Image 1: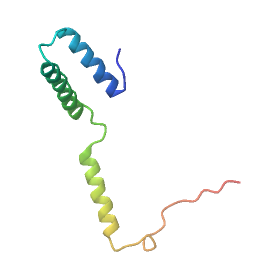
Image 2: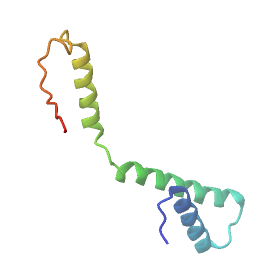
Image 3: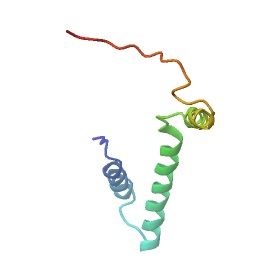
Image 4: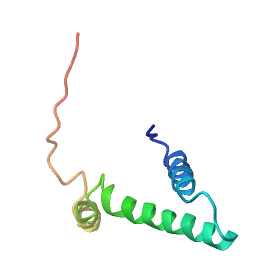
Amino acid sequence: MKSTNMLAQLNEEIKRRTRVVRIFPNIASCLRLVQALCVETHETWLEDNRYINMTFLAEQKKELLRMAASPTTQQDQPNTSTTFCTT
């Protein structure tokens, strides 16, 4: 059963992998398996889940900084907004 909660999903994957091994020779070997799984999950998350294009976000931030640094103010620019009246 897949979950949208990342922590629950990670715990389920740890359970699944430790059931396959069944018996660990020592605590360190179990810890290595869990650490490797956490690293794998982290790398997968970094590579796969790109909801926002960070390049676009950086360009947008630069554009906003340029607009803020420009000498023109809102009063100098023509009003292009339209007003709608409802009766």
